[in-house]
Length: 205
Ligand code: SF4
Ligand code: SF4
Image (cartoon, rainbow, N blue to C red; front, top):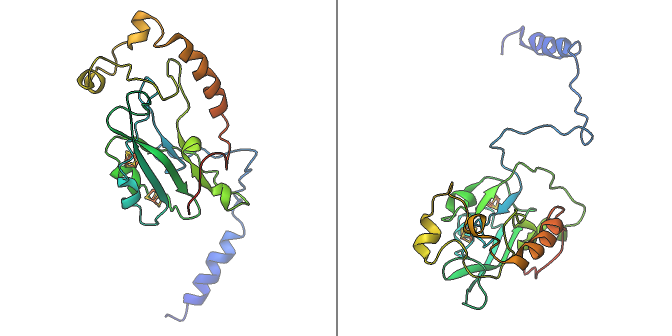
């Protein structure tokens, strides 16, 4: 260390005293994040409302913080939550453990799991920071129907998965997918606008 180094250090402190302070007016004014900021997770849906998650648990295995808990279950013809064989019956993310690293979304084979820009994840209850599937599921958009219901994007799995994403949806050319579905979807859309923390399923952790 040179003889002038302590004075250089004090110089930094001294010059900082004359800089304009940066004051964030949070929470009144929320700062916009970078577009690819890693925030709260979201479980996405197909255009007909079925869930993209197939309950494979790859996200849970990829998580270095052991923050994800998944239990898969079989779809049946009577009760279908996702296209294909399986769906995520229980899905939880423990935000007390999550470090928002994004490894889980890289591991997901169906792009069911993505991350939003929502960073408001503080709470005064440990229990409320374990988010359930109901809280993480994306809200129903117009034309979507709340599962369980049959696959509505074509007659076969090939039709379902290989359809042109820009092509009009079947019910946009031939009416609603299920007339009554839109009403049910409307109720769930309204319910999903404000996720109810702590609502829902069992919490085994
Ligand atoms: S963002 Fe990282 S820590 Fe959080 S759940 Fe995903 S893999 Fe785990
Ligand atoms: S979110 Fe993706 S990786 Fe995780 S269980 Fe569902 S499909 Fe598998």
